[in-house]
Structures are given as structure tokens and as C-alpha cells.
Image (cartoon, rainbow, N blue to C red; front, side, top):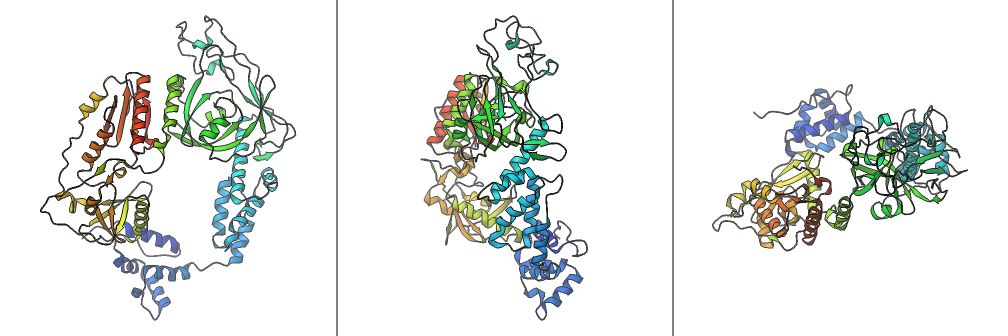
Length: 618
């Protein structure tokens, strides 16, 4: 007797809603691989005598077993969860205001839930917008939204979230609950590092060894024995325009208020005459941006050039912050945007200012408070890191989020001459998985991986695999059809010692991960019938090389060896490509050549899984 996963129990309306019970049942069906034919009998068996009797009475003179699963669910839903009164639902909706401690995003989610049975129809978004504006606790945000013409729901949400975040940031940067004038004290530089804005006691460089005098306790920039070649540049300060609306924080009630006073400090702490700035490369919306670390800067910014090249798809919100240099010259602020920032395996949504002109990208305190920076790993900017960014940008086509299409190399499959084709029927699927399998099939057809066919001599059943994100990966069970009669591909797979030999002399390593590697290879027309799969939606055949074919690893390895032939410092092991060099310069040249070769053959790479210039890779 087969084991049963889970325990359904009888439905009890005093402890569980009908919608929750049916949802649990559908998971129960999926967990136990219950076929569609047995869904209704199973459902009638587990719901309990009380619910079954009720169902019989509701369906008289028809029998429960004559109905479909959806009809049974809807019949009992109408009884246990009758359609609510629209006027009562709208009354609750329009009475809802933002609660104390409730964020804007939480408030919007509640409003959308309350609007579920209000039947607003095409007016839903406008009604949600109106309730959002009217129900906000912060009068400052309300007043700002009321000045907007053609205000949409999405725009109202974005502005509210942005102003709410600005208030919280200002609150964190403040030292009391009033409107502050934030300015930088005119203190001397730290004798450990030469920078200002912090105490020497807490300086990160107090235990470092100077490269100039070899003494411990300071770095080269702050060395007293070194001839002073330049002066630390004067601070530049963000000054909010007079008589303009700006946002500050009231710590007691977390309100956004108006003020025309206040300074927001931003420092550019560089040393003229030789010492280079400390920088990190952060991913902004997936794009690498070199940013200068500046603990004296209150905010983070990029120039409009960087914005146009890498972040131009992001909308900018108006900003009344302007930049004043130490000479009093104004620098125009283009706007403010919320960007997804990735650094050291951390991901945050953070505010970024965009300025007009040729200014460096700065990472200020507002980001440093949110991101844990490995200070010991921050390195002095070199030409290598600048060139790496240029190489990645040069080959941006390779990193597109799409399925690649290997050019010039096609897969040919052959079977033993005397073998008989195998046509196996589609296997029954759990009821709850059918919609996901159908969606996955449609996606594969759209991506030119599968094509529907009406007849075939070969047919392989599928095995749906549930991915971590809840989606479905469709795999053909080729071990019961094609694999036993497939002519083996005689191509040796690389041994680990061969890989190490190819990387001999390498100082640092880059790993390139191919996106859905096998599916980037096309299958010849005459071989596609062997790769036909049988599903509950009919027959489909693969146009690309699928997983599950015994010779797939050898076929793919041979293709990649052919593509990468002649490139020094490069080895490939299935879908991973390793690149190295005897120094950074040769490493970068090898990486450039590798990405160029991949681009020539139409291949695509998963940038989020790539690693560059690492001391070790897995």
C-alpha cells in the first residue's frame, strides 16, 4: 500500500475558511500524485460527513459524484463564503486610513485587499489612488501629492514611498527631533588616514602599515615623513535651495515637513599629487559602477553620464537639492531615483542622486549604513579595474537576459540501425501541476525550444521538476525511450588534472557561467523526431538539445572546445568557463578574447553567476 503524504482531515468551518481548506486539498493532491480522475472521489471522501451531507442537500436532485471538482468547490463556496454586500465592503474600504507605524507599501497592500469585493471595475486604480492620498498620516506627503497634475496610482505610490524614505534617512542623520541644520565641522584630518569626518580612535586604518615609512599606525596618505605634494580638496556641500520645499524628519511623529534651512554635507576626500582614491565596484540595477567610498558624504550620487549609460531606464524624481562647490559654484541636480544595489552578496533598494556634469560616483553614508563593506578588501583603484568595467561593457550583448543561440554548430543524434521506435503515452499529472506545466510548455515554444507536432514515431513521457522559485522545469524521461538505443558520442570529457594544467601560472581567476547551456545548441531537423515528448497537451519536439540525453555532455563539451580553441588561459568544463593569466593584464586580455568569441557564436551568459578576478573559484 502506497504511503500518503499529509493529513487532510474533515472541513470545520469554525476553525478554517473554505478557501484555505480547498487550497490545502490541492497541495494534498500534488503531494500524493492523485490523478485527475480521482480528484473528485478523493475530495468527497476527505471533506467529512457533515460537509458531504450539506453538499448533497445543495445539489439535490443531482449527485455529488456527477459534478466536477470546480463545480463542487463553487457550490460550497457560495454557501460558506457568500458574496459580500458591495456597499458594506466599500464602506470598510473608504474608512481605512494609514495606521501608526504602518509603511506606505503596507497601507497600499491593505487597500488592495479591501478593494477585492468592492467591484470598482475600471475605476479601481483611481479609487485606490484617492484612498491612498486621503488616508496618509503624513500631511506633508499629502500636500505634495495634491499638487501633482495627472497623478496616477503608480506615481502616487512611488512619490509616497520616496518621501517616506527621505524622512527616515533624515531622521537617522539627525541628532534630535527638530529640523536640523546639517553642516560639517571644520576639524583637521585624521592622522591615521588623512581623512576627516571621524575620530582617529575609530579609524579603520589605525593598525595599517605605511608603504612609505614602513611604520605601523597610518597609511601613506597621512605619512608625516612623506613630502606633501598636494592639499586635501575643500569639502563640497549639498545646499538645499532657499524658499523651496525640502524634506526633514520629525522623530516624534515621523512627519515630512517643509523647511528652507539646512545643509547636507558631501565630501570629496582626495589627495592631489599621487594618492589614489579608495573605490568599490557595486552593481546598480545589474550594471557595474565604480564608486568612491566617502564616509563624509551624506548621500550617494552618480553623474548624468553614468546615469544615461547604465541607469537611463529608471525614472527620476524631482529634487530640490543643489550642489555648492568650495568656490561657491552651483552644480545642477538632475533628480533622484531608487536603485537596486548589489555589493558583497547584499541587495538593497537605495536612493541615488544624479548630478549634471563630470563628477565622480560617490558612495556616501546613506548607503554605507545599509551595506556592510569589507573595508580590508577595499583596494586602491588601478587601471586593471577600470579596464575590467570597460571589457564587460564592451561585451554587454553576451550578458543579455535571453536564451542564446549557438551559431554554426548543430547537434546530430543517431540511433542503432535495427532499433524500433518507442511511442509512450503521456503520464497522468497531479491536478494542481497542470496549469504550471502548460505555462512552462508555452514558454518553451515561445523561446523556440519546443515546437508542437501532430504525429511522431517516437514519444517520451515528461517528468515535471519543481524549481526553488515554485516554477516547473520540464524534463523528458529519455532513459525509457531514446537513451538505450542512442549511439554513444565518442568524445572524452576533461579530467580535473587537465583543467589544472590549463590554468598553470594563473594568479587570479574569472568564472563565466553559460545560461541554460544545452538549450543554446540547435538540433538538426532529421534528429528532432527522436526528441518528441508526450504531454497532456499533445506532442512537442525539441529544437534545442535537452537535458537528459546521455550524449548531451559530450556533445556540448566538444562544441565548447571547438568554440574556445586557440584561446590561451581558458578552459571549459561543461557550462563553466575559467579564464586566467600570469598577471592582471594578460588575464584581462584573455577575458576580452573569451567574451568576444562567445559573442561571435551567439552564446549568452548569466552575469549574476559570473565571478571576475578572484583569488579562488569553485
